[in-house]
Image 1 (cartoon, helix red, strand yellow):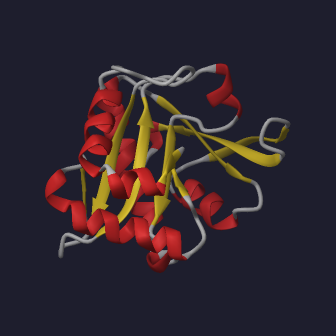
Image 2 (tube, one colour; image 1 turned 120 degrees about the horizontal axis):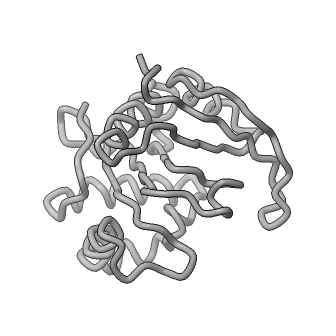
Amino acid sequence: MQLIQPTAALQSEFLSMVSNFQDAGETRIHDQDISFIQDSFLIYIHQLEQNSFGIDLKPGFVPATTFWLISESNKVVGESRLRHRLTPSLEEVGGHIGYMVRPADRGQGYGTKLLALTLIKAQPMGIQRVLVTCNTANQASARVIQKNGGVLISTNHVTRTGQQVSQYWIELGTMS
């Protein structure tokens, strides 16, 4: 398994993952409509690259670098976003890292690996302490965060989403 930045060379593999999300009834990927990704893949890749440099960000967004977790056979099994800094909104929900695993590949340790590799990418950016959040009901995500050293600091009701969100801090110096 390796973590790479998005590339047009893996378009069919990534779109296969997108289709898997769609089949599972998940219609958005990191605030992006799936149909846009499918119809405008090269624009999507360009937007991700621009976002990592803080160029053409949507209002309220911060620079974020996107990574894909790929298998030895070049199957895209997951995606993560490493936000370079926090805003008050991201401190409430979202945190530094958002991640997702292809629905068909969940429960196989890919989420744990994806988060671990993304945490390694945070260190050269000068991020020493990483905030990761998840819906409190998402126990699988909570386990992924805890396996990566996440310490629960709070659980709050987020009015704008209507969800209970658990917030975890991960000290990068304590990663295993």
